[in-house]
Length: 171
Image (cartoon, rainbow, N blue to C red; front, side, top):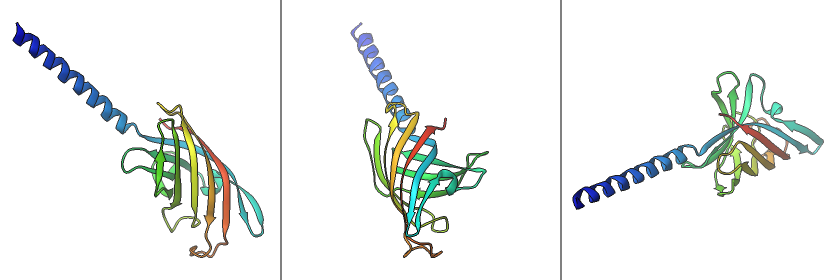
């Protein structure tokens, strides 16, 4: 009888550990969140200011998506995607350093990912995914260099940017 009891305890403990590992693996893979975003801000150059939205970053049928990857390789990206297929057309900016807190807050730099696409900038992003446990929305502040004329192969002038980003998670 003692052998059967011991065997049952081992079986239950193994099952519990197996379920815990499965849940942990599910939690890790669920750490990539994509958000369809709206960007609202002001670009300032020597000649004045202009409003900038996600529409200024792309032409239909493309959309702008914020991708937050919390598990390695830990990254934040602004991606340009085809609206009908959801395929990535280009990565506009990508993070080099980033921090993610358990309450859903995050912060990172966003640097130009593809030199052939758009201005040569370096933006800072600070925001929060809500709710923290199973995020459905994201809200963030973007601020920084939209274009650095020294490194711009097209000779565009210096530009700074300050704005907000809001988004709803893509299932």
